[in-house]
Image 1 (cartoon, rainbow, N blue to C red):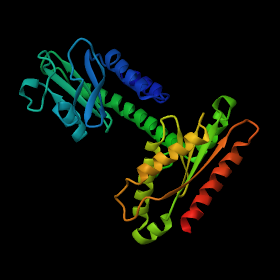
Image 2 (cartoon, rainbow, N blue to C red; image 1 turned 90 degrees about the vertical axis):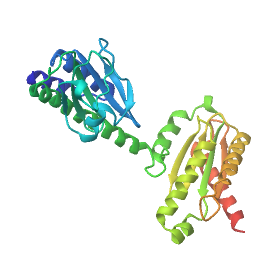
Image 3 (tube, rainbow, N blue to C red; image 1 turned 120 degrees about the vertical axis):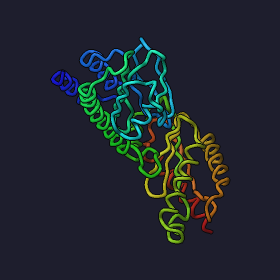
Image 4 (cartoon, helix red, strand yellow; image 1 turned 180 degrees about the horizontal axis):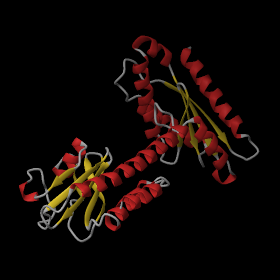
Length: 303
């Protein structure tokens, strides 16, 4: 059984999605460990959600993450064997058939539970084999999570969560086609961020920047690409959008920025707009024109 579990562990090492790991857990639990009744519960927000379960017995498909035996297992990080469910105060059995429970944590990800219809069915050997399986599953899930985080950071700004310049460049090379014309660009620069940082500190300035970035994002359409260009600058890419529509979006952003009232200063951003109308125009010239238009607005503000 241990050798077979290691074979499953080897397969887990090549998984790229959590769902693949869930399937392998079930495969090992049923085919190698012979657990006929099971539930694989994964943390989602404040709940444990059953991602996999046997069809031959009722299970709790959604429960608060720290309730019941599963919740206790998650909270303590320790395996729990219940020989007689009727005598366990924390038990919330989903079926009257359930007599004994083996509950094994999968780190902070969730809990694997197997039950039987006879009391005192689980031995320490069963627990140790299940723990070995969940240890391998935990390693696979942590690797997938870390890989996803790395991929996210490769194309996203860590402060605002917006796409970064690297992603913008790749996206432009993909969408800079005639079918997406006209293509408009909004170039935005936050006014007075340095003074704000000097007066109140960089953490205050970061909160200010995050609030402005969120407002810009929420003011745009779902299909618009909002990017943190760098520092206090943002760029919005608008496909099949003429200058007039781009200016309307700017007006909507400015209206929503004016509603921000949780800082010591009024939210102030300068915007510039430029539009690519034909394929003869270089996109980088359009981007440069939007930036120049933004600086022109910024100079007007200083007068």
